[in-house]
Length: 289
Ligand code: NAP
Image (cartoon, rainbow, N blue to C red; front, side, top):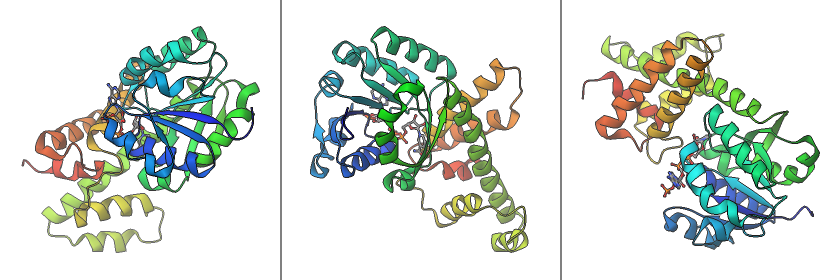
């Protein structure tokens, strides 16, 4: 393999489209497929080759990148793609999925002679657009060098882990923190407003101390300015991740009350009509309407 590869990007939503653009900037040949074809077609101007089926995208590709909604979507798309894939190709699976999904997808990859990398990412729309994601990549050590140009095109940091599942475990742990901070910001802001406390007074109080946090400030800033569209990470996707985390906790004997409550906040915000907005819209779940 050379450093310039043919990459099939399956799923060109918020994250997949940004990753495809950075793969193009790095000089790779990129075929893009998306269920709603308009999102793949929009990448033609960047030099991508939009195709009509997942099978067409993966045919003779060196690398497949799946960046879909969840494990069920990945299975469905790969049912169509796998029969067309070249044995020996690399599969970078970056959709956030459950640990069971990782096992199932890794087994299917093995049936087709693929090198499977469980490779979720940290970072949202803006880091994805800037090629600044952190990639958590767990898969065969002997093929790492071949995947390196891909992870370096989409991210600025790669954490290599040994076995499929290791990366998803770390991703779920990291997301439990991200989601908790977002909800904590929403509740702190709504409480301050309800009690007639100027939220700026709260931020002045914590400024520069161990309670201060840049992510909290950023998310609360979005809530205060009502800048929730377009989403960086949609409420519905965040609810999906919360449910994955809660399930992983239950399976492994820990009780995650905050994650469960957070999933309900996202559901309530979605029921209120905020499902497509940024997950900072958990703020609205503090109110009855
Ligand atoms: P998104 O914009 O909603 O994209 C989801 C993609 O999945 C779209 O291409 C969608 O196609 C496709 N899809 C959904 N169901 C499908 C199905 N049944 N069959 C085929 N395609 C299907 O979401 P995103 O924010 O890019 O997230 C993608 C993945 O990355 C998720 O697993 C998410 O948890 C993870 N992630 C997101 C972020 C973030 O900040 N956004 C950060 C890290 C990881 P359509 O366009 O046709 O709907």
